[in-house]
Image 1 (cartoon, rainbow, N blue to C red):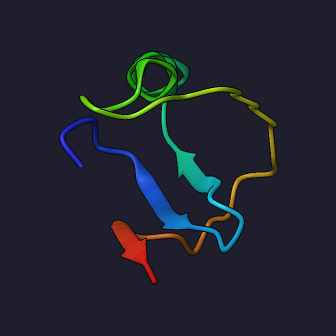
Image 2: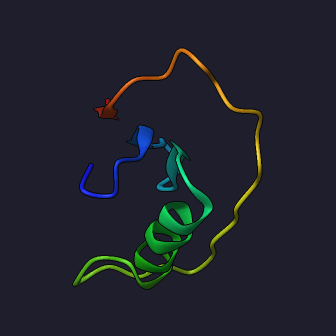
Length: 65
C-alpha cells in the first residue's frame, strides 16, 4: 500500500505465495526487491515474476484468504 500499488497477495495450499500487483515499473521493482529478500524468519527459495496485462478495474490492495 505504501508504494501505491494495487492488487492482492494470498497464501496457496502448497506453501507458495501468490502476489499480483500493478503500478509503475519503479514501484513494482521496489516491491520485488522486498519480496525476494522475504520477511524476517522466512525463507524464499524461488521467485518468479510474470508480466500480465493491466486490469483497469483493480482498486486498492488486499490480502486474500
